[in-house]
Length: 458
Image (cartoon, rainbow, N blue to C red; front, side, top):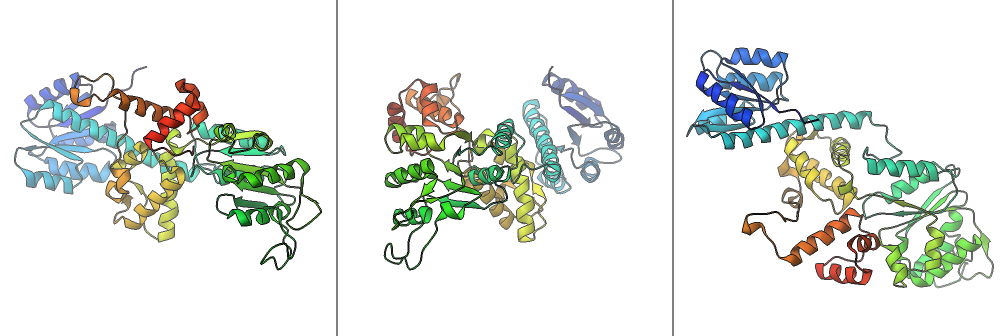
């Protein structure tokens, strides 16, 4: 089934111009209808749906400027492109002020006109998508605090539903900013332990000297400043869930103690000669490639298998398709309320920039981007100029293979680098999966990634 041709309504009182545009644009993929008068065109627009209107300015009766103003007022979803005589800049500016999307100058050249109409059609499609997303955000049945309707997130929801009631240890993997703690909380709320506490610790954020005490507790006087006894998080999570975030950063010395605690279901507080049983479900998370860490002896293999009973891999935001704009609208609603600003959504061009950006910081970066835009915007919609510079300036690095222009051709090393990084992105950052897909051993892949300036995190 082929896609419908974009529908264009041409308005011009010169029959020759109408014939030229109907035939010329028809050959270029548009479904064109022409009317010789603005009032006829406006009436037709009330009866039929068009993707874009192109109108002359100087016409008998209602002129193009008045038509543009009426279309903008009554059908703001339909972009208007105006035709103006060469050099009539003031007229073109007047048309833009009353709501015209774009203008082209006479004498007309069909190819620039085609490009202007294609931009207008894309603008309308994205504008309708933004409106749909606003409604979707309002009507969406959120899965706990998670938002997203992509197939990738659907698989995550399904796995949460299945693993939640089962009292098994869960390892959540994914890049930084993908929402691992939110998923851990969703697992907890789906479990039989939902009435108990959800206790969380970031293993990378606590100094090694204090981490053992935080986890296992200590006796009074066990070390300097241990003025009173402390139970530790394993015991504080009794009857609930203990979330060990960034477990891939746990020091080796503590990994063996954690393994023993998980095996024995008991902890030994620092300074104590007795073990205290605990009853808590363990959910761990990491943004590191633990398979590689095990192979390189940076993470204990026995501990890895102990925590990796059920693995729940979160997709990066760039792999979630339309969820980007859905989440963006959610954050617009949230931050506009927080800042008490009447911002209702995204301008179509801004939405296009967000959808094309790679989001290395994932959902956390998107939230920060929208918060900044809401704080800065002077309008009721976020525009491209309100977005951070790196989002505005971003362009996807596609590998050009079938290029005829010599300036588009790149060295073989560049093609290899782009492809390796593309594969790494496609598998969610896993060095293990990327090496398998590329047919490389992991040491070779690590060496190449180091040369590209990529760190050892997923």
